[in-house]
Length: 282
Image (tube, rainbow, N blue to C red; front, side, top):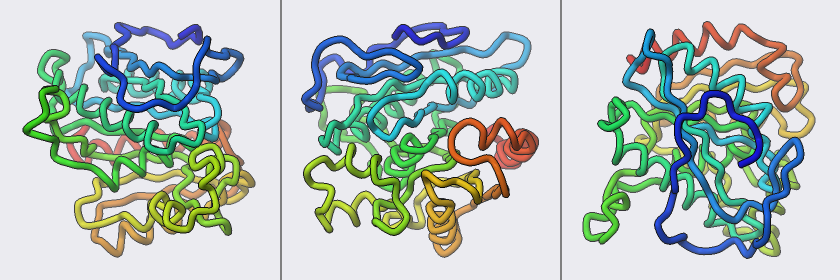
């Protein structure tokens, strides 16, 4: 990956043999964001020795499932996590290109990989969170609501490990694919020619998948978000509360969509720190 992520300790190979294909090939397209991603990677960033917890967070950046905008979203949030002693992983997941199974396959694999190697990186296997932004928030809420305990019969020992994240952070996430509140570009890139499919629309409207086993969740959204309406976070929060899941939500009047939502509203930092601390993840 040509985009700079500060303090990368190691690039990890996600798969020994890729599962499925997104139909993309050729070199990645790197501008401010990354396009044409057909080979996933997981980047490990270790915190300094002065302050280290045993928690880890996997960052899933956004870009409407058409590109991956790592620089603007991963860099500032990774630095904040590192300062608080949390080990960071940045997932460069494959873009769906209409192959909707592919991103969630990579995201679940990343959780399994981190959990399988947790002791090696001084991580508690029960303190692994995911943090998603925009379309990355859709991906994070997908794997947070649909997960498994691993396949004990798999010859791949990593696939034997649980894919359930222990906690979830969602910033201005796409949650629903329902036409009245979704981001249409995100839905089209994820489902491709199946974007009018009612069954898939309901399946990937993640408010429908919240249940009693959904992990605790922290949400941030701005009321003036014109790209991903705030209703996405509201419907998810409502379902979390209905299912008695620990949840906290920050709503800001202004900030729009994208990094400005958290850059212009820095009060999220003490709020998130307190939330993490209250749950013993910090």
